[in-house]
Length: 64
Image (cartoon, rainbow, N blue to C red):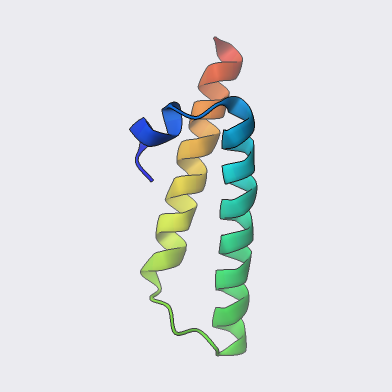
């Protein structure tokens, strides 16, 4: 997701997105370790970047 799209969401929605991204990352890592991964390795990187975007926005809102 783009940062612009994430900034339009409420704080509660961002927390839900963060939980979903963490679950997606866990599932991606789990499937990679078990050998059932049909996904690209780039997927984990994009999920980590999305998590960082959400955390950055939440931190900005907490400081404001």
